[in-house]
Amino acid sequence: MFSALSAVSLYFASVWPTGQVGIVAFSSLFVAAAVIEMGIVQGIYVFIVSSLLGILLLPDKAAPLLYILFFGFYPVIKSSSEMVRSRMLQWVIKLAVFNAALTVIWFFVRWIFIDFGENSPGTAIIYLFGNVIFIVFDYGYTKLIWFYLNRISKYIKKGIRDK
Image 1 (spheres, rainbow, N blue to C red):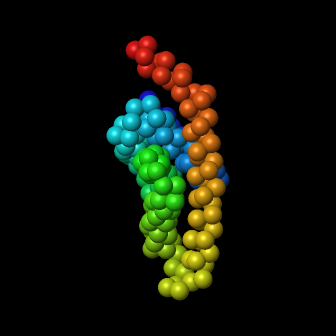
Image 2 (cartoon, rainbow, N blue to C red; image 1 turned 90 degrees about the horizontal axis):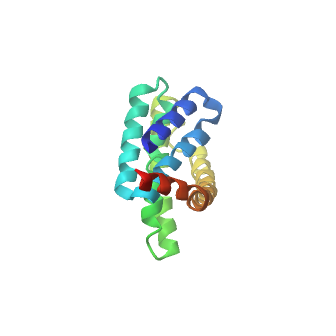
C-alpha cells in the first residue's frame, strides 16, 4: 500500500512540475511510514518498488529520478542515523549522504543539460544553500514524522491488527 501511495504521489509530481520537488519529498513520507510501521527492511522494499513503478510507468522521469537519487531512500538513512547516540555524528552522516546525493545530481545535471565550467563559483553557492535548505528540510521532515507518529500511526496499526 505504501509503495502504491508513493508511486501515485510521484505521478502527481510528474504532472505538476512547479511543485515537483515538494511533491517528491512528500512521496518519501510513505517510505518513512513503512520504516515506522514495519521496519527498515520493509522501508527499503517500499523505496525499491515505488522507484521501479515511477521509472517504468511515468512518462516524465525527473520526479522518479529525484526520488531515487535522494528523497526515496532518505527516510531509511534518517532512521538509521538517528539510532546513533551522538547528535553530531547523526548530522555528519545525514550531511554526508545529502552532499553525496547532491554531487551525483549536480554532475548529472551538468552532464545532461548545462556545462558550467570546471571552477564555477556557482557550485560553491549551490552546495552552501543546498546544505542550509537540507537542514531546514530535515527539521520539517522530523516534525512531519512526529505528526505521523502521534496522529496517524495509531489508525495504521489498528488496520494492520484487524487483518
